[in-house]
Length: 64
Image (tube, rainbow, N blue to C red; front, side, top):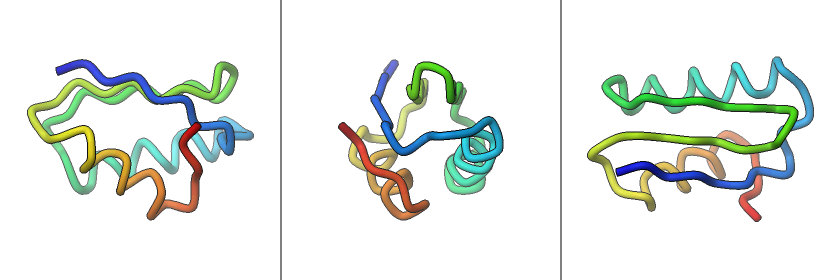
């Protein structure tokens, strides 16, 4: 399942890396790409969309 989310609170490469690490800590088998320039998070995983949304919000970000 490929999931692409718009995360307008991604404001730096450091924030993007931190979010990626947070996601991978919870879902280590996921393929995660976080792009601060386009403010997008792309995830390929068997876990549910809701799981990733919860992780992003828990990391202090907002999903558009």
